Image (tube, rainbow, N blue to C red; front, side, top):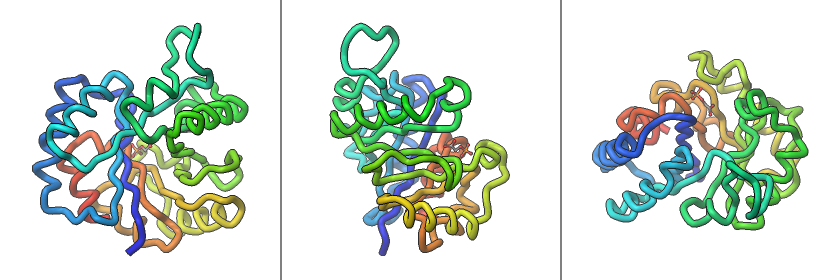
Length: 221
Ligand code: PGA
């Protein structure tokens, strides 16, 4: 059985009490699911990492945590930034290169390379997002998420066959070990993606905000 990464990207959503409620509901819904080959990673906003970390420990939940961003700088005088050393206290993964940050925050390839370096320095595994096969992937990346812009939040996912072809070609052109698909994944369509030979999991935005739906995504994957 191949390893599957099922990742929730909460984007800029949820308060502390909503996050705790989500985790409790998720534990109840997810109790029956077989997660032995599945790595479940929740990527909440920074403000929720500490509270989720302690809830995960209390509930003995198998989920891991990831951040949605990382400072391109180390510790120091960088107002508003959250650096790798701070993130590592709570999380093991970090999303880098999401198209929403490339577009709204004008993140360039150069900045993304610095973020990857910072992630590596603090032993955080980058989940590096690409928008197509031509997006450049910094060297040493193990996990890439292929997320075509048209599919994000649109209810219009890529075809599983095309996502598989793109994933295959990313693996052939780079040293990347796992390629995930992201963009309008739901409990209804997840298996079509996860069954593709070159797709190793999914990055889920909107559908991950509901604990029950996210548990179904894990069960159906
Ligand atoms: P979506 O977002 O599942 O809401 O399409 C995916 C993502 O942007 O990671």
